[in-house]
Length: 313
Image (cartoon, rainbow, N blue to C red):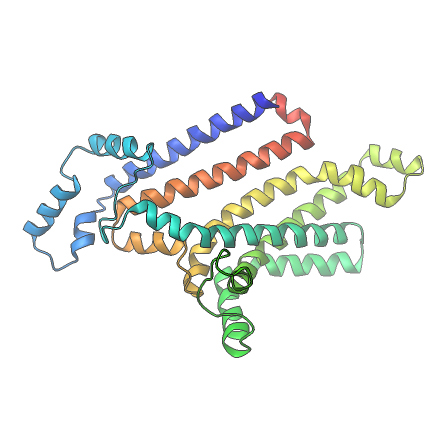
């Protein structure tokens, strides 16, 4: 198992390196100009040229890359070309907001998606069909549209939850829960539908296999077979879907954060893109990739624990 984990960890690090390196050269080759972004459209050519020298943009691209990479591995991600704020401070301040939303959405989706998926699988007939229709509708609803509806109905009209703003967990756990409830709901609805549909199909498939029929013939109860044998074999595809939904929640959080005026990492990335702030974009990208790699590693470990055959691949 340790060899399996080390192999997956090294693969994740390599993937992160390739993605970050590719993004760095992509931003450079597309003509993104942090100097012009920092000074604005009305700056003169001389002012832009001076700023480019200050930012080190007059050096060869390879030298800029090696300089950025050398500092990044030591935890120094530079400063924002637009605000002069340290990139690490911007990321550390905004990361808890986005991680709260993404983890919250995945936890809610995992619990409710599992319940709905199993409920639909073990109740073939009208209830299964109704739940499948609900799943399709939930998957089809855009999360930004759901976010707007939730903010207007439960934030502005009913005032049950704050329509904007974020309270950290450390300052007030109750306030934190209130501020993330609506954004998490907006992010989770599509994920609930996706996980429920995946698990429902997996449970139906596994339930029809020979070893399940053998267990039934031996007199084991339906509940024991479902909880002990069927779910164990049906869980891996659902776990894969859960990791994909976490990635989707991270990307979808950028739009949801804008709707609820939350200063998360998505909002920071959007602002940095508007200002051509490559240092901030690279810092946000690196942390996001590391989070995704970490989540995939955890899922791979769980997958390997549930299905030992995976470890020998």
